[in-house]
Image (tube, rainbow, N blue to C red; front, top):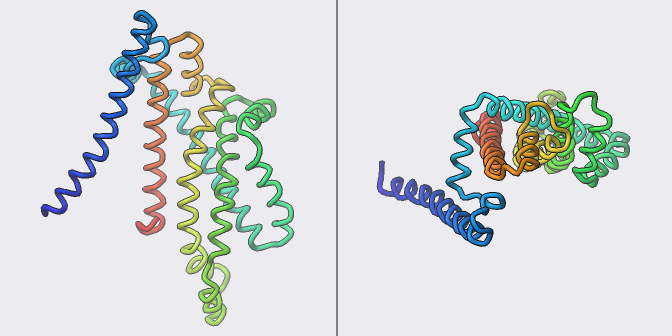
Length: 262
């Protein structure tokens, strides 16, 4: 390992550790101040990082913790995948056919404009079971993002490459594989990175309102109504960690699809 590589690795570690230590310190100071202001009842409003870490460890040894986390991941990732497929298909249809553009574009813009809370309530009224609500809401959040990004990627395809494909008499499948997909893939990857965070937050919010049997959102709601604030913070930390895990997993998948370029 060269000195320059060692220096870069050290800088990466410092850039990760220093901000984390700073904000944990701010959190701890806030918890101490709140405890002082409330005469020893500060954990009801702002528990310290040590207390939250203790509750997180206690929760993590329970099977129900992993069942709730796993079911939330399955629901939200399923919704993300569904929204990505529908959004991509809609973008291809609107780019290829004018009538599809006339019909689908206003609908997608309406989906983009409607607040998440409205979607959650409406889907909760129509869905056969509460378990599918987070997936549907996540899909609705992902759809407009992928539609916009993929549509932009299609429109930005190099016209000279398309002329070249015509000159060499490429078929539709070959033109799609060799020209459109490489052009669209960076836009698709960027859209997935943006949409994934939206899907995760919207899915957990939907769980808080529809309360499936096994879900992080259900655990958050029950911790709130029982005033178990350390548990509330512990589940929030779980949401953040799983969001990073899901983002890394999807990013690795996209890089694999794009040959390491995504």
